[in-house]
Amino acid sequence: MGEIGIPGRNPVNFLTDAQDPFSGTTLGELFTHHLRHVGVFDYLQKAMEALNNSFCSFYEVTEVNDQGVKLWDIEGGREFQCWNSSGYPGRTGEVRYVRLLPPFVDGSQRSVTMGTP
Image (cartoon, helix red, strand yellow):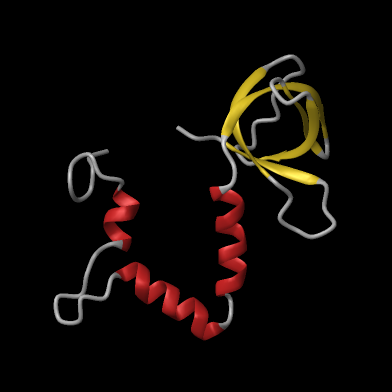
């Protein structure tokens, strides 16, 4: 699939940075204004903070069950119960390079894996 917009630039950023030629307002600014207007901006901001504060690392799959997977943080030495966003359940002993997002729902102990190409 060809790249949209400026070569070498993230296509999503290209779309959100698109400007109205009359006001100069970007699509991202309009989206943010809409979210504030309908009262859900704080929810999105909470999700984005979790994403911004996470990073990719190596994890070993220690268990696969109907509740998701358990991953062992090889560097950090901790185990996490996770929901795997790709849908692939994996196998015990596999090593994965993924971004691990902290639990988003208050009181939940389940993290979410996010594969980063």
